[in-house]
Length: 401
Image (cartoon, rainbow, N blue to C red):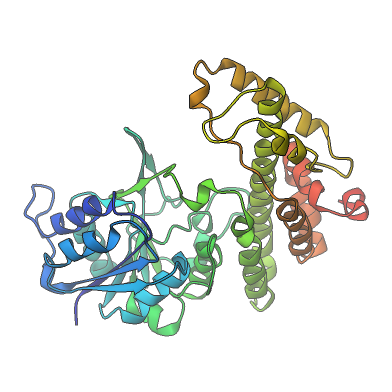
């Protein structure tokens, strides 16, 4: 049995994968910061080629020869990150399991540090900090738990409701997990989720696992703003955060302490509803500003199709709310301040049915929250958040909220 199974799903990541696998190989090399490097004979690497159309397969062939235990799962078509990770979990043989995405990489000594933490703390899972990478800039992102290097009840990572806690830090790659979580089913992700796969997953761990810890180990290098990433795309896949909260609320409905944790889940949901509504408003406001100014962006010209798209009823029942008009004005100023029009991002055309689904499904999921909790969390929200959340609600719900 290998000591560690490392699951690496990737779709069209040939440009990044050499750095990923070199960083994994470095975990086994002597280093001043790495007094106890891992033994490659104790490492199982499971690569998931998730429907790639670039040179991902060739990169995996090249680097697979450098590992003692390396296998590739090839999906002819893209099945998504959740299903890909689950395929890896089915093959995992190690005592411990780690996830890594195909466009991120590891700093020296990260895996030895995480293994040492698991073996000394004797917990179900260990969470860690990470380092964000945006171009040439680096930033430290700390896991929101001040108690470090100590075994804790995972439920202590849920509250308080009004501030960031461990359920607001769902990144699957920021940690290491004992295989007993896999064997019990807790480590598996919701099937067929294309986005937000880690939202209900992290709640499941903190509600049902027996122990966890947080350590100072920011050795995950998380690449942000990657072109083609689903976080950059506005389509129906982004709505899966609402499916995630259906699963979270179902767990809370069947938990003896569920009502205690509902305010936290409601606050999470409201924050994401605000975020997604704001993104769609900004996208359409940008399209309108581009059309009004007659600017050609990098990929989309300001033509009649864009103008037709601007008829969308974006905010409020009458279409052009003050929130939307303010967004258009802001985008107009940003465009006019751009010296080179070729630097402008393309216009994203958002189908009306996506906006309709966001509104209808968001309102339905919000109505699952117990009324006393809904009123409490809504009243404690900022005026801006209340305005965004009200967009999702029927008229009767808006006045009562």
